Image (cartoon, rainbow, N blue to C red; front, side):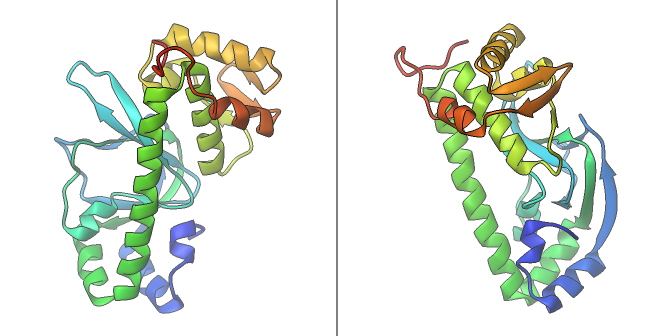
Length: 223
C-alpha cells in the first residue's frame, strides 16, 4: 500500500489495516459518494486522485480539496460521521485500497495510534480546504488555475496531468471560456505545455508565483 498516510502507521497497525482493505481500480470521472448517496467506504489512494466538491442543485459546484497518494477520502466514516455536503469525484483514475467504514471504525476504536494518524491527516487536510476556499475568493482565474495545476501535480503519481478545460471549469466553478483564456496565458508565459488535455509543467517556480498572485480588482475572482 504505497500511500503516505498508511506509511505513517506502525507495522502492527498496517497489518491490521490490510486485513480490512481490498484493492480497487477507480475510473476517471467516477463519483464515489454524494451527500444523498454515501458509500460508507474509505479509500486509501495510491495512484488515483479524488476531488472533494460542493455541488449546487443546478449541478454547478466548486472543488474544495484534492486527495491523492498522500492520503484518503471517506475518513469521516471512521469517526461515525456521514458524508456531509461533499461529493467525491475521481479526477484521475487509478488504484486505491477500499475499506468498509464501519469495520474500520471498530478497528480504530481499539488502535489509538491509528486514530491519531487519521486525525492529524484530517486536520492538515482541513487547512488545505480553508486555503482553497480563500484562494477562490481572492484570486483571479489564472491564479486559481495555476494553483489547481500545482495541487494536481503534487497529488499525482505521474509526471503529466490529463485535465480537460471542461473538467477544470467544473473544479474551479467558472465558465469553460475563462479556463481556456487562462490556460492560453499560462502557455504563452512558458509556464506549461498544454495539448489535448495533457498538461506538462515547464516552469514550476513561475507557476507558483502566478498561483500566489491575488486578483487586482476588488479582491474578487474573474467569472
